[in-house]
Length: 94
Image (tube, rainbow, N blue to C red; front, side, top):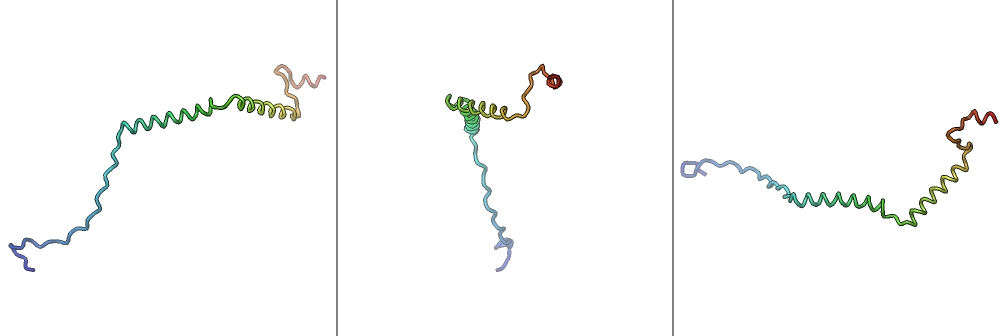
């Protein structure tokens, strides 16, 4: 092919095409704020369900089991607990 003023300058090899850039996802700030608020409220609600959602009979059962375990542990102690005013020297005098 002849290159001259009638054909224009010689052309270079085309650059390889880069893939088109992906655009960032458009975020509606109002929706994002509301979703964040809903998530926080759900977390608070879950904590309240655990705290206040136990039926009365299950709470009483749990308390009774704790008391029984404490009594059993106290019954197996080798040394009886002393009151505040007693000391070890009081026991030695007896």
